[in-house]
Length: 236
Image: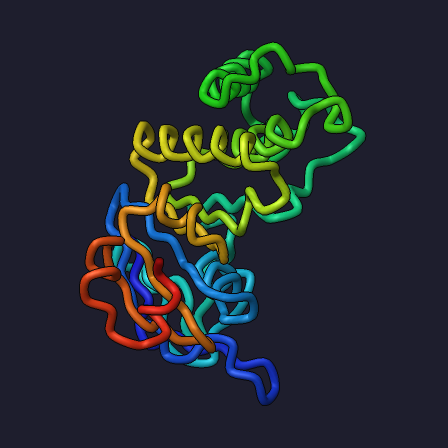
């Protein structure tokens, strides 16, 4: 579903992503785990098309969507991305926030049905006419998820979406994300520096350090056969 081949991104003298290669299968949930500044978010932005690689390729379903000299725009990649700051429109209701990205050629009935369907997925049907400031942090996160899911993405990218939530809300949203990902069979890449989040959500985990992937595997593989002292120390 997603394939990165020798992907590299530089910012002046800083190598943010250094020759990364990985594959994510249809319906798989991969977590990118590592300390701040290791290149996790840059990888997401390269996959989404918000950044251009200096070398290497991003392929989706076998098609090259990013490479030096070739960039397919983000809106043509069938990718949904949830940012850390959520970026909800404060002057719009939940309904309007969610339907904002829908094409204008849909009828009012079609738009209404799509909004109601996706609100059911995230259990927010009763909050249709609320504004973001009237919602809890967990509810705002659900709105951000619904706004992404209404576009029916094939790939879901999540950039530390739970970092500002308290432990109880975080656990609740982890369950929501896992259930949605499995139900919709969406290939998901989840960026976090929180080991507990990665371990509770992911099918596989990619440990990143200084723009490189130290090791990719299941939790059991990483614990039993760490390939470096960094991985051994990082995975409890």
